[in-house]
Image (cartoon, rainbow, N blue to C red; front, side, top):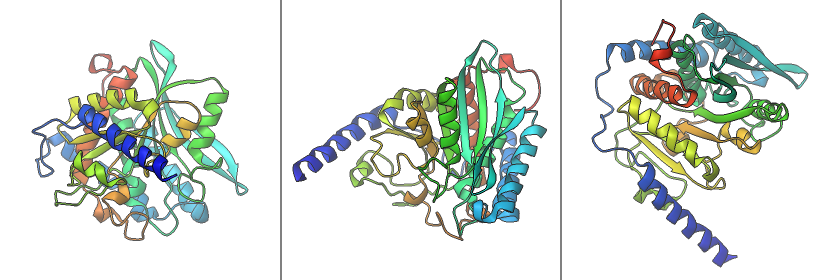
Amino acid sequence: MIILTLILLIAVLLAATWFSKRYRTQEQRAPLSAPLGNDEAQAAKRLQRHVQMLAGTIGERNMWHFERLEQAAGYIEGELKEAGCPVRAHEYTLQGKTARNIVAELAGSERPEEIVVVGAHYDSVMGSPGANDNATGVAALLELGRSLCDERPRRTLRLAAFVNEEPPFFKTHEMGSRVYAKEARQRGEKIVAMVSLETIGYYSDAEESQMFPFPPLRFFYPTRGNFVAFVSNFRSRALLQRSLKGFRAATDFPAEGLAAPEWLIGVDWSDQWSFWRSGYPAIMITDTAPFRYRHYHTMRDTPDKVDYGALARVKSGLVGMVRGLAGSSELQKQGGRR
């Protein structure tokens, strides 16, 4: 057993070495303090408004605070509709109540059978207002809608706000994204990419502000928590590489990538897990949550902890990345917002 454990640890170390060489960020990336352009400054204000509404005005939102959960769903639906997105609710019954995933869909113009899903869970863990986890992911999702819903992607694009990602539903058949992914597989849908936006609003230039689930990773990745991480299992590494390339082409914000075994702590900590279980390629984009953010899953996860300038720069990268995955482009745009 000891020998097997050592072999597995060595395998992870070797894999981390190889993937870090392939997916490391470029040199000369802009620092966290880099000034924002006008578009990003305006986006930062909107992102802050979304996070303040979800984690400040509404606050803790889950099945134990169901009215607040519904209020959050209504806010998300309203914002997506205002952005021009066709929106529908994907519903299922849980604890005698109707739980809702909120989904905006843009039909593909050339390959509509190929589907790209970008998701973020909108519930918060019990006892937390959930600003960084995961109002930041939802805020970015809403701003993606603002940027993309007046475009015509070649592939079908879905923007999904998932319910019930947090415990006790995490990694169960009652998890909102699990219900959604299972039904998609049963319908025979061809989801070619799924991106989970998970806790993406906290960054630090302080030395040793970044921790790791596997200590040797510190030799291959920055020890300052000033980057956004792209994470996948081995089967989804091609999607990881494409996504990183698209993100880096659209922003100078630092990004790091890691493809690793699913048993490595943190690799499967969000809705991408649900899509892996249904056989779909999926990645997570994250600030690495508890490996950097000490307020994770506490009552102190409040809107004032979020770096909205950094989040706006991440959002810019996400727009370019999603355009690439869905086959959208400025040439196909029908007019409207950026």
